[in-house]
Image (cartoon, rainbow, N blue to C red):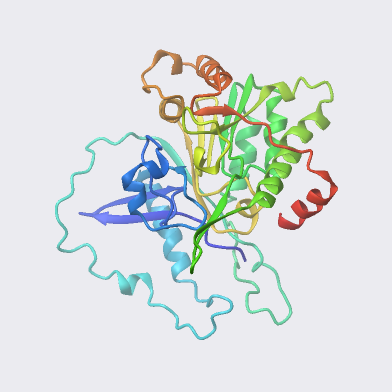
Length: 379
C-alpha cells in the first residue's frame, strides 16, 4: 500500500482556511536558512540530531487558500477517517473522526491578518493513492477499498507530469533528491527534443551515518554503496536513456545536470552539499508542479502523495526567478533572471566556475557488474 509521504498542513483561522503543501517533513534534520551554512549555523545545531542528514537542506512549502486548500483538507480528512485499520496494527483502536476531534476548533481564536488580495491563480490539487486495494484479493483485508475510483476523471501526479511535459516548448526545470524513476524521466527525455534546454537538479547521494557509541564516542560510517546505487540509476534513467534514444548525442546535449554545494567548498565531503529535497517541475514559465511527489517509482505509484499543479504565466515566472535567485545567489529582480535563456546562461557560467552554489553533475554509471547487481537490489 505504500507510505504516507504527503506533507500537508491546514489551519482554519477566523473562517479562512490556509493550507500548505510541499516537500518539508516535520522531522529532525530539516531546519535551514537561505544561507545554507550547515552545522556552522548555531540555529541548525539547536535542532534534534539526525543520524544521516547533517548538512545544509533545501526544501519548499506553498501557502494555499481557496478551493485548493479545501481539497487538501478533504484529502487529510478522508485519510484520517479511513475505516480500515493500518496493517500490522490490528489492536489499535479506530481513532475519533476528524469532525469529532475538531468540533469547536474555530472558536476563541485571535484575530489573524490575511492578505486582502491574494494572487489568484489556477490551481489543481493532484495526488498519488496506492491502488493495491482496488482489486479483489482472496482473503485480503484491503480488497475493493475504492468502489468509485476517479468518477470525475484522473487527477494524479502521474497524469499531470506526463501531460504537462508533452506540451513543453521552451524549457524544463526539474528538481528532486533522487531523480532515478526511468518511466517519468523518459517523458523528460522525450520532451527534450522540442525544447531549448533542460535543467535537472538533483543530489549526488553523498551520505554518512553518525552514531554516538559507548566508550567510542561519535562514529561516522560512509554509505558508499548507497551513493553508488543512486548514481548508477540516475545514469541509467537519464544519460544512458538519452544516448539510446539519440545515438548522435545531440539530444543529450540539451540535458544539463546540476547539484548544489555550499559556495567555496570543493564538494568532496557530504557536509559540503546543500541537499535538495524539493520536488519541482517548471515548464515554459507557464506551468508548475510542486509538492511531495518526487521522481521515484513510489511517488508515482503506491505512496500517498499530494502536489499542486499551477498554470499561470505571471506566477510561474515569479517562482522561477525566486528559486533560481537562491541557487545563483542573486536578487529575484536581477535582469539576468528575466528570461529563461539568460537565466540558463547564468547557471552554466556559475557551474563552470566550480566554486559557486550550482555545480555540474555527472552521475557515475561505470560501477562494475557487482555494484550493478547491488544497485538493482537496493532499488
